Image 1: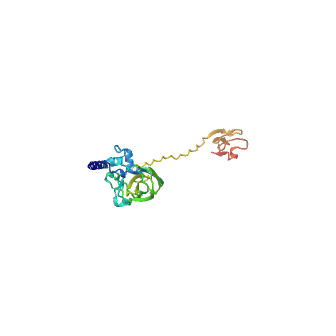
Image 2: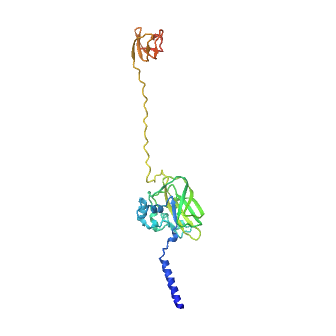
Length: 288
């Protein structure tokens, strides 16, 4: 009887071990990414890994396959422990140095980018498995960064660190964005500090406009030239013959009359009266 129980126990142990061996080994590292502004992996995941729409996501899938974008929430390192620069080499920051996510490191100027401006910016982290007591660091590329070159640690400038955070499924923070122009990149690190050395990494492309690195600049409209109006010339009054000057006659400006054998032009409209003969009123008549 004792031997029978021992055999049964051994069989049960082997069965449990076999089942455990069949379970996937990676779910423990599937936890989240920046959703606003969306990270590269989040953008391509939302475009549909099987049929992405942007040229950059198509290239990323071609480089590393579709699985990386189904596992969009595990761009991470279990062995980080705050040693990010030591374990992730330059040029592989977006993939966390993992070959599975190598498509995220492609140096391109056409990654879908979120338009932002300097000043306060609310960022959102989408965590599928939030962990309490975590530190979050947010960086932005320096103005000198060239998006057509691999991203290096020296290209980043720290914006803000939030320590001892307790994230939820969607957690917001407000960071102050410095002056920039053109295409830039916001980089984040989520470091667990209790019970694990695991850390998560994100690359989010943003566009400030006005820079030479913008692949789709808005064309400058050609200004409409309004012609300068030309002044309308004042017409020269046409002389109106008026015959011989006569008192009681209404004369208009420009009318001509004869008086004493001479010709005169009327300067002001008036009705002639005795005493206003042309030679006597130069304000009304001008000799021609």
